[in-house]
Image 1 (tube, rainbow, N blue to C red):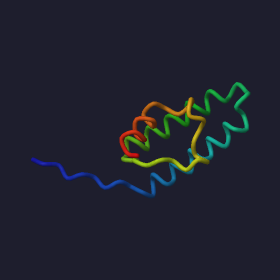
Image 2: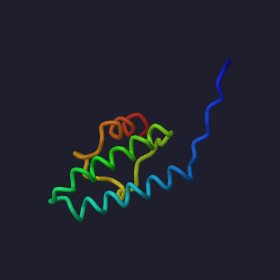
Image 3: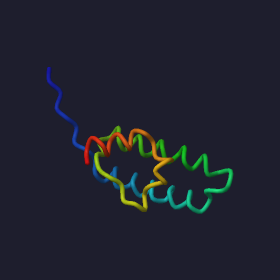
Image 4: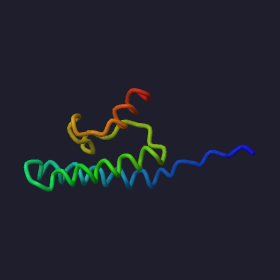
Length: 82
């Protein structure tokens, strides 16, 4: 039995990308404070969820953290889908 691919829920991905933008902005305001690590952890969870749901594009620069803080899955995605 062959499975039919599930369509990517673009509205959900857009909502999650807005959350990434909010987290990136929050991190920029708190990057030198103790909660910065937790913000990065939450950011990674949301971005990995997006990738698992079929996200295959570069993020808007406002939605990104500095390159050194972006998860490896995102770097791999950019190399696979330039």
